[in-house]
Length: 169
Length: 313
Image (tube, rainbow over all chains, first blue to last red):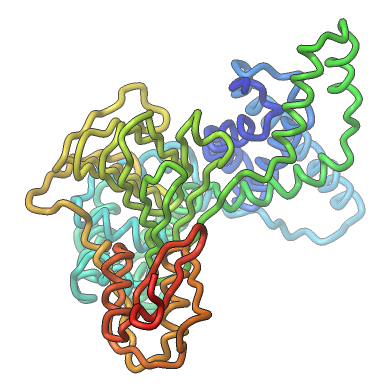
């Protein structure tokens, strides 16, 4: 089997698992919305699939990110038009965009990542199981072989340490 | 002051203090910073989720596209240039591959280990919530399995055996080892022999001998060592039956070991009380059959159960 033919589903799947996360993150930072980031990410890969014979394996990454960026620009352009139309016709003035202070920039995400890496092993285990794998205290306690109280203690210390690490922002 | 705020943040995140209670204890700008950090953590968590689920959604969309996609351009590329034997053969194999149903998938549900024997008699014990896949037809040439979850392997010596997961690969030449790949946790432990471990997106691979393991949670890689344990503890799982009919017990054994019993010659209503193991078929059969004066014989695809005194062979 040709391991570099993107039109082969197995290869395409590998490409997906290689770049999906990073692409979604790239899109989130632009759109500041998780759902949109997921949708556009999947759309981008779908476009890649439809054009699989036109893209060489080596150029896949830049193709994906270029496509995603273009999608972002298109959508923003469209949104601008819609908004202008709304303003011109005196429609509702409420904006659904997040307030400025709730924007999550790349720097901020990187700080969070670093802070998590700097947790102690015990804190990090509890944090990942609870906040990323979304397990309940009871399940975490069972998995780690500690009491529920201990889970709570470690989670609280992990969160406090994360805030301490991130400092002023 | 900051230390106090750090603790307050943690407590608020875990729901120990409400928004109103918090606002009474911190200035407005600090409250806003709490909200931002909370959102940041939520976003971070969401972006760290494994992409399996979204891959399945995308797969669905791709299937829809496939049924509409005109195949002309692809077929023309094969047939137009000199219609050589090679081109036709390639087309034949491509179609064959596409429709082949030689992919075997083994899955476990909650709370149960499942033992499976691969075509070369290598043994796999799948832990609960795990899936193992492999191609039956290609097996002899290429011993490759795909794993999601956790499994213990006892590989028969011979050709290279590879376990592929979404976090990396483990390669062996006849040994006993476990591989765990669940979300962003990847772990490989060698109980006997040697294994080679390769993480996705990393160039170097590690070679581990017995008593050595490696674990990667998120980005952190940690070495594991242990003594006095020649197989994982979760292997020693058993299922307890209290005064249950033999039929039920045999059904469970069929499930756990992927075997089939021929029970036409025995009474299935007799009651059994005891434990059946999840990693040793022979022992289990002994435990269940001996007290009932039953014996077994492997006949082709199934296991025949009978009364030795009555059936003289």
